[in-house]
Image 1 (cartoon, rainbow, N blue to C red):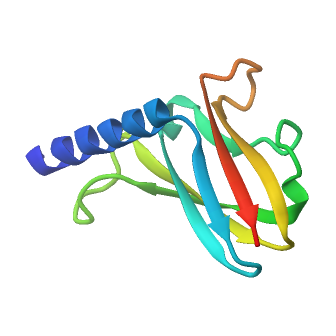
Image 2 (image 1 turned 120 degrees about the vertical axis):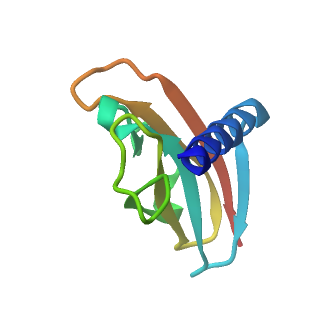
Length: 123
């Protein structure tokens, strides 16, 4: 139980430092793939989505939602209300620059609670 609490706190602190740090920057070679990880709490309905319409030049990459992994010890079942790790796979397709926008919100609501931008350069 203590291990689960410590993992949850570490995940929250990691996300807070990422948000404060601002935008992420990736430099990829054509064909290279990176994984973007974001903390979410799907039991509340708030999930991260790639916002293609708000992104700039997203055609230079392929973004795939890889799903989420519940936090906690593998020996324990996932707990309702516990944070999870959502991950996206970003694959470089053609050379160029893009700004990818990811938003956290409930699918049935318009209000975005968090936004993350990732600058990508494909060489």
